[in-house]
Figure 1 (cartoon, rainbow, N blue to C red):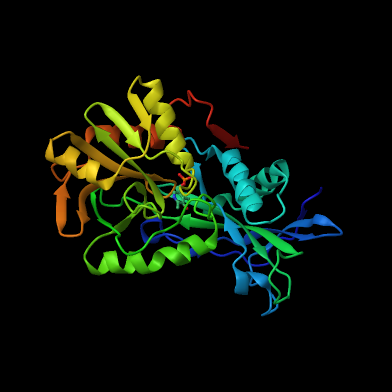
Figure 2 (cartoon, rainbow, N blue to C red):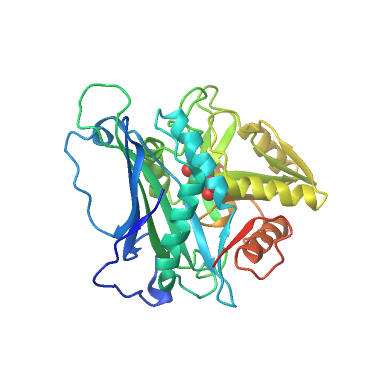
Length: 354
Ligand SMILES: *Cc1c(COP(=O)(O)O)cnc(C)c1O
């Protein structure tokens, strides 16, 4: 399918790198394609970034059939544009699509559309260390219908946002708060899909954590409220003695691409790696015994987010000495080194756009 390109008449200006936050600055163009039963996915086009016109009855507004992805394009010091494991994002988008009764997209077409769009918007990619162009593919249900069933029409779009360095002031360990009252997802539900409703469902616990002075919520499993699942919208890792421990993908955990990359590097480096259930009691016990050495979250936005304090009810534990742990930093340096082209891509994770 040919992708039509309609250039914007006016071009915006990218703010200074130091003024960039997250997800506020959008580029001049977007990619859009529509789906109907008769035509399948059709009319792929790059057009000026603009508002959509949708019926107030569009199903996405009522029943939440919406899925998305998040990845980044990085500018290297020799001015190349790099993507990190981008195909995996579209494979996961299709996995989310199957889970939410949304028609899958052609991965080659989606990759091609994204790369063309990024090329057109290359001046929007900031250059300072840690900055990037955030890519947000999304699919929404557009049928104007109030009956409950899967929509018959959809829109797929990709928007781009110039984003600042996540760690403008260095990797300060964050404080996280175990939610006792709320759960993010339950096995058999949609927790393993990147769907909008999971985020809506997470907000109340997040607000409570923030009010208590904690940056993120540590989620426990939805059934026994015992086993650790994720932190905020990141996967979670613990260094216990000489082992790298992360919850196994039990059905309610989002299969993070950063998670998968941390696991691959750890195995490659000969570390002991275990994906298994880990209860919050075991974690606090390990801390008591002095064997909980490090904890960090993993996700595209932060890459690695060291955790320095965990609160569970009235119990509070400190991890480390206020600085990010050595192993956390080792993963951070290796991943960002590959993403920004400062380290050799030994795993074949990088795709250069040219
Ligand atoms: C996107 C996401 C992650 C992290 O996935 P990455 O592919 O590493 O960015 C983790 N948990 C949740 C709930 C997410 O939505």
